[in-house]
Amino acid sequence: MSKFVVVAGSHGTCSHQVAQDFGAPIVRAQVNSFGDGEVAVELPKDSELLMGKTAVIVQQFSFGKDFADHGNLISEQVFRFLLLVHQVKAYGAKNVVAVLPYLPYVRQVRSVCGTYVGPLEAFGKFVKSAGVDQVITCDVHEQLCHSLFPIPILEMTLADFWKQQISHVLKNDDLQHLCFVSPDRGGIGRVKEMAYLCGAEWAFIEKKRTGHNISQAVALVGNVRDKVVVMIDDILDTAMTATEACRMVVEHGAKKVLGCFAHAVLSPGAISRVEKSGF
Image (cartoon, rainbow, N blue to C red; front, side, top):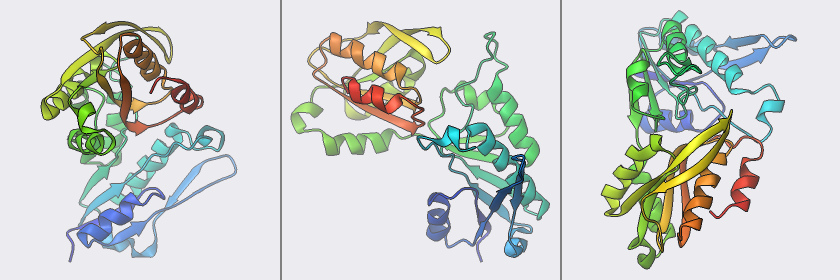
């Protein structure tokens, strides 16, 4: 008998694949709401399977093009997740491991005033209070996230995945002229890792914030002339940072620009910006 039970926290296929790969039982949560939008999370009768076991809650936060117009904002998805964790603990789960490919609030490490007490730390306290013992996620925004989050984060980097994908879409001649570029200073660690894996050069963009969700590329540090640029970043939300960085590397002579983004939030307007850019 499996030592853990998979709990499907969303309608994605990831939870079902995890349960199948490990031969673990799966419990599917039912989420309903009252007329005022108040959430009701229910677990089925077979939830006694959770008693004394480790519960692995797989939660895929979704971002359809119209998610904000249909009561599916990230903050609402987060609250449903927290209620689910609370229910799972109430059914007697010994430990809770949350598999969150996209970790909400991960880019808000610092508060608006610039201190290190930001929303991510507050979110982590909520997650811990609900009953989560460990989080498994992909590509956190920066290493500081690990020290500020109050419970352990097991981070899965996508470096090997990107290397494999790049080898599929580029020709041998292009692979010999790679340059990995970060659209800001925060992602330098990612591009250095990729450059080391592929024996390539790397560079980064200096940017400045001109408003909320608005940034401007102001300088390129490194050489991209006649290079095949692969831009690496964790989150593609408004796509303003990425497309501004793309514009700058094209102006500095990049031969071709590819983008590798772990979390495709793609808020309204993002896809159009990417399609009109030099990617």
